[in-house]
Image (tube, rainbow, N blue to C red):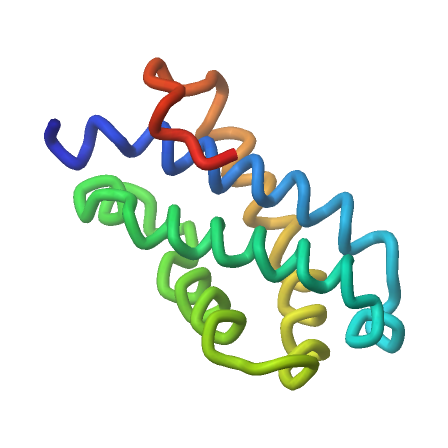
Length: 123
């Protein structure tokens, strides 16, 4: 299967991760976030899904949609994957609060229906 054919599934996962992140991040403040372990773990997992899905979107689609911060999403994923414990929690919280709404709006306009092949979806 050409990479472009999997783009709808990756974009769907990105949209769903954004929706869930929005719900979770509103449950806490930046000061509380590092100590809210279960919530932080859930947020971290969704950031991993968001970054991994963004990394797998085809180069063709990325070139057609430069308005999506592809590399920033991957950097945020790397921050979560390579930072141990509570270190970096404040930066992660701020990044989600500042960047999630514009990204969510973009994804809501680009992704209007679920992918045909639901087996490829992560969420």
